[in-house]
Length: 470
Ligand SMILES: [Zn+2]
Image (cartoon, rainbow, N blue to C red):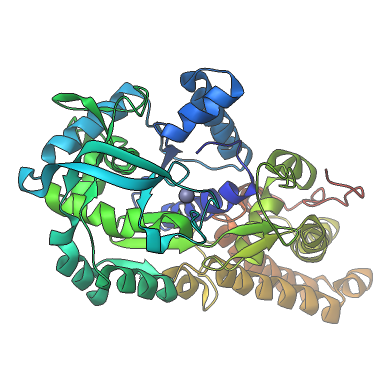
């Protein structure tokens, strides 16, 4: 990363966190890692421009990124900074595991985009510019160590075709497959230390080269588990497990092509599933740090609350498509779905229970989710899983309006009222339990409210907001 965190980062973090919390809720043993990739040459250039040292610059970015995690209630088990000595040891370990038969020295000339940290062929440029960064690549000529990616073409093609390496969505899988079929070329996995200005991880045994930043960054999945030290957590990668990557559509080449090839060469297990999310626009416009139009995620979280922002990112944005982040739409969803939907259900139901002296609710430890909920998770459709929960909220709210329990209460018909309350509380508890991966604080607060020896009226979970957010 080479920028202050924007709301685009929040999408990926929230998706991964919800997935992790869902599996934990099911009782699975999980490990969730994220981190900051800090060894890129572009950080050296950005530091120059800002008049600070690269180390200070990445400290600042990494800190801001961790603050975003905290603000979003993201709970990784490990946050890896690729400038940590421990990661460096892990990257060196991985380097030495790559088969010697797969590498060779080569004098190289190419067009290099520092934004991508990648070489381009003339034909892949658009009007002579990098299609992602819209800037002209620089001609680079140096001696590098190359990786024999071409040797892995058939293997990777077959992994993708058979689904042994599962890529979602399907459209991306097809895009990647056609990229692989068009021919994989060997590529450089080192950079000259001189051109990198000494920033990065030196190649073991050759100080004139640093490890290609993407090779270094990808190994964070292993270094964070202590694969190089034989830590117990290494089994999350090397043992019987389900390894899932969550990433943006601009970096699939590295995760779905390079990374599996490196792992095959190193004799290590491959990821099982690669989930590729789209890009966010803000109010219909591309997020860019120079334009200054990106919504400040911290201010948005302060205004709407963390669960409202998580709700928006997981419900209003289909996980694999590009989506738009708009304060107006967030404001509308906050009031329609959260304040008037879930929030209203909790306050009116707990109020009826308190006033009618309902007492204690006998809740099930693990309530059964409505049909379609787990099915939605199988295809990582968080938006659909939330739709299932919100249909249930709507149906209970509708039932309460139809039954008019306040009339029963007035007439003293408690034996009619309380069985209905039990039915509604059971539904609400099921919602609260399964909403926890998405809205952890809200889910927990409702579960707590239903757990005491007596149900009492609750303060609004989603109070009315004043007009403006930023
Ligand atoms: Zn680029």
